[in-house]
Image 1 (cartoon, rainbow, N blue to C red):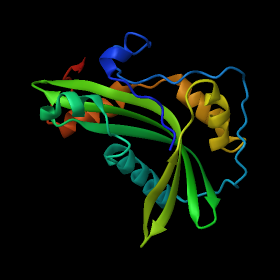
Image 2 (image 1 turned 90 degrees about the vertical axis):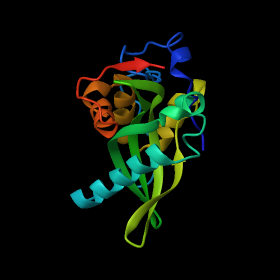
Image 3 (image 1 turned 180 degrees about the vertical axis):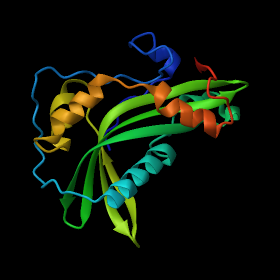
Length: 203
């Protein structure tokens, strides 16, 4: 699995433009108004219950997979805070490949912990992903994750993950940024028993 590098947030701020309360590694914007995808599998429609199940599976996997989240900054440097990863996802498309489903999405994840009356922000990232899933006893399971390569290969590898129609949408969402204050932070405050206006500070 190819992974974007994910740096401790305090260091990343020195080299990346990050929202004051953000804490996410920004994805490079790709030039050009139309960058069609190159994946050949047919895009399929899914009903609302299947969509909900797919996204719940993706969210749980990204937040809890120990391999994917190894090396998270707070977990290594401030483990006593018991940090955890919080994610949100935008579904781009679903394609079928044999008996499995290819779920293309844009994920935004941030490592957060409670310290006193504040949220502490650690490792974060935002990236287009392609999750290969299969149904096991009526429940979906993630079997593989693909994501764009760093550097010069980012554009072509992003396009390879999505259909001709899906890639432009994924690229647009990945480059547009996101508002953690109205998405991930409220969930984290509730999870850690903090009030809705608790501050977010950088680790």
